[in-house]
Image 1 (spheres, rainbow, N blue to C red):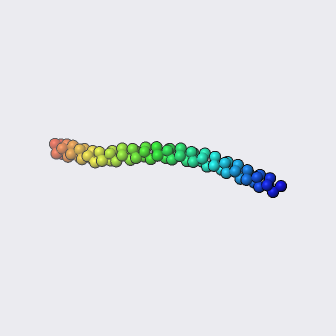
Image 2 (cartoon, one colour):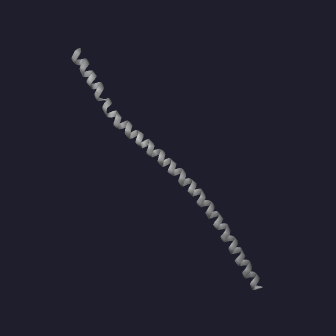
Image 3 (tube, rainbow, N blue to C red):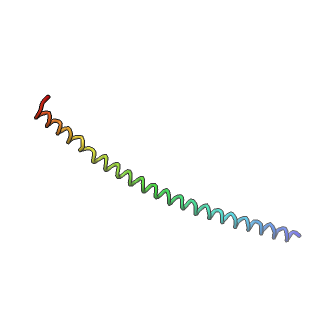
Length: 79
């Protein structure tokens, strides 16, 4: 009788181990998919950061030109 109980216990433990392994594998696959999505988001953010930085660097000269034009107009036609 005890052999039957031991065999049943071992079989149940093996089934539990198999189920747990399957669940962990499933969770690992889901986390890998989420990691890939985060990598894509990070890549997009890096691209946007680069674009914004380039736009900010380009905007520096835009203030200088109108000021020079206003000065030239003021020189030619004082108020």
